[in-house]
Length: 83
Image (tube, rainbow, N blue to C red; front, side, top):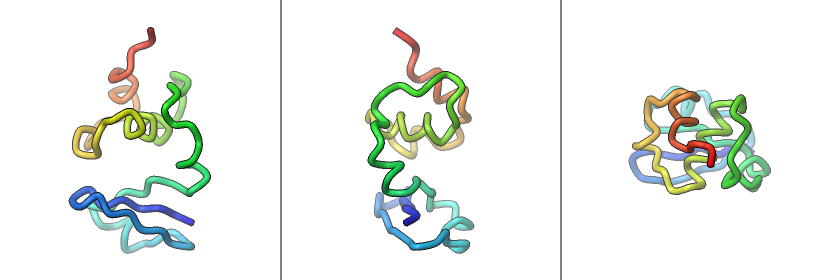
């Protein structure tokens, strides 16, 4: 299932297939499949991981969609410096 989150309300919906309508609306974000969301996104991804992986990591570690809006992968990486 594809999972979408509404940036305005925080609502999440699941669809069997990708929704062209939700993909087109600015306030809906595709956040993944259930098995992707269940993965341990709290662990820091590899530096060269996808923007999607870094966005999931940021959300799992307390950041909000509003904070992440407009950020690219390198911006997301910079939010979590290596220790």
